[in-house]
Length: 171
Image (cartoon, rainbow, N blue to C red; front, top):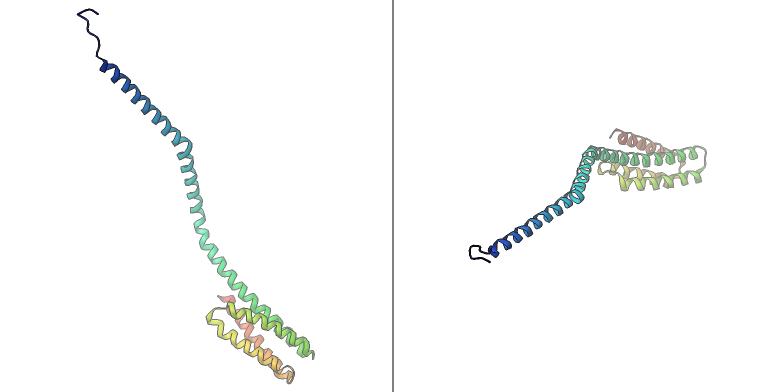
């Protein structure tokens, strides 16, 4: 080299290389961030938004489901009452025809329904169901000795069951 020309400092070359590496790093990071956004974050965010919209559509149905469940429970109780009433009326008919054995079978079946009803009925009706079970027990006890008294007890029991079915239907 000639004396007038001086060699460029090596620092400029290192600085250029360092800027090149930093630029490549930023470019790589930008590409990775873009890939992450478009391939993972954006689809998941869209799916989340769709799920939130669906949830908002279903929220009003939650109250409706609770209401329907309550109605189902009331209908189930009413069904038990009506099944017991059917068996009590069958026992009444059997007694009217002088068929004490069939009347006893029907009364036993009514007792099973009343027992199930006693376990499921609300506390406000529990005492009524307990009295009905007692009345049925009286009728069963009188079946062999006094069919007229058993018939009378079954009439009262049928009336009580009808009233309970009406009260349950009103609720």
